[in-house]
Image (cartoon, rainbow, N blue to C red; front, side, top):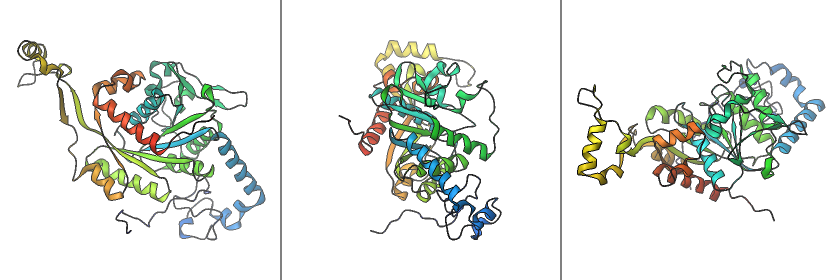
Amino acid sequence: MESNAPTTTSNPAPAVDAPDNANAECVGPSSEKAGKSSACAGCPNQQACSSGAFNSPEAKAKAQEEAERLQSSFHNVSHTILVLSGKGGVGKSTVAAQLAHTLASEGYAVGLLDVDLCGPSAPRMVLGDHHRTAQITQSASGGWIPVYNPDHPNLACMSISFLLQDHDSAVVWRGPRKNGLIQQFLTQVDWTGETDGLDYLIVDTPPGTSDEHISTVQYLQKAGPSTISGAILVTTPEEVSMADVRKELNFCQKTNVPILGVVENMGQYITTLPKLRFLSPDGKTDCTDDILKQLQESCPQILSTLVTATIYPPTGGGPKAMAEQYQVPYWGVLPMDPDLLQACESGKAFVEACPDSMAAKALQCFCKNITTKLPVEEIE
């Protein structure tokens, strides 16, 4: 059957065996075109590639050792899921953290790996205030032990935030140093814990399709072609966001990362009347108490009615139409809910705090999609 999904042939993804500092279109040092392709122009590795240095017995042994370390690190991780968005500020970390909380609340062993090195927000969203005093320790084998949620021993988090003496310090690193830390995260973190491994490892990525994404995908693929179980793309419904998310969709296609689904986030605001503020027509006087009192006296049942508003008017058919265009699953809307934001601030599972809310039901539906598509085999 003929596909209508957009395809692109320019700017191909770098090869799995590309050096860390290679050009974005690297053909790979094992390619016959290594050092000779137009994509090699200006690459610091061009001479080494053309000389065959990366194909020497020593280089091959080093690559094999790295692959074995990756395989060892992920041998007890059933499924690895990337949470992506080409646009910043669309709630990607919120979705990643609450998916981790929701899966953990259902009894699964879950880890959240934060590779947003310059803006690590996952620790607070997973651990709450505990993230400020949390520290990484080492296992007997020398691996890093992630930090576990104090209330849920089946929920762990790993982030650069735990390596900083001051949590407010800026991480001003160039690409090679970022790549090096991501490699350490993927090869040195011991996810064994009290659960003897993970059912799901969720990887929270920064916006864009730059170093962190390329390095994460390349390293995971070195561990095996099926190490990356899939990606979840998060977007708000306006064109400014979707234009960047389309680039992320193309990135996944080029790097052979399966797309599990598209989540439309924050397009809809939902709450109850008592949580709203009411102002006078000139906007200077807060009339909330008076209006709520009048409603309580005249129409009390309305106070428990949900109210909603459109935050980002969708462009065209919105994320649903975009998903259909790219022939990937559309998972639906995650409404903006003040209680959801508070759950992220305090590092709590929203589905436990507000189980009857529309946002909680959406999260449960998303996790049902995950566990159905990526089931965890029971070990007798």
